[in-house]
Image (cartoon, rainbow, N blue to C red; front, side):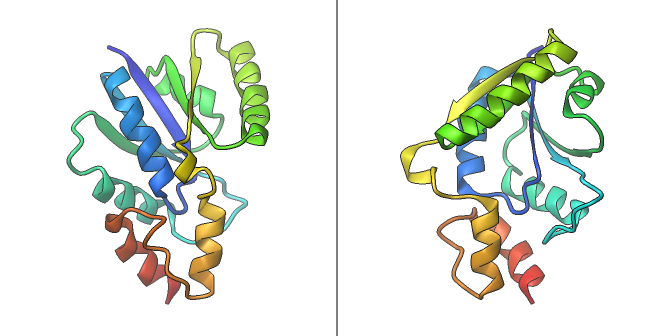
Length: 158
C-alpha cells in the first residue's frame, strides 16, 4: 500500500492546500493529512478544531485520514508507515526551504521520499498567514478557504 503524509499547521486550511491534496490523491492508496503540533505557538484554531475542519473539508474522500502529531515529522512517517511526504511549493523560496528539509529528512530516513507538488498559479499567493491576517481585520476570506472551513473560522474570529 502506498501511504503518504501531508503535514502542516493548517491554521487554517486554504484552497491551495485542498488543490495539493486533490492532485496527490490519485498517486497514493492512503493520504494522511496531519496537523503538526507546535506547543510553543498559539494558533488561531486549536489542534482539535483544525482536525475537525480538515475532516469536514475532506468528508467525501475515503482515502484520507486526518490526524495530529508531535515531534519530528519524519518520525511520524514511520509511525503511520508512510513512505512518502507531500509538500506544496508556491515560490522559489518555498522550494529552497523545502529542499533543505527534504535533504535532512532523507539523511534521517532514506526510505521516506519527499514529493513536491507545485501550486497552480492562481493559488501561489494564498497562505494561512495571510488568511489569518485578513480574518483578524474582519476581511472576507471566502475566496481563499474551502466553504466547509468558514464555519470554524468565523467562530474563531469572534
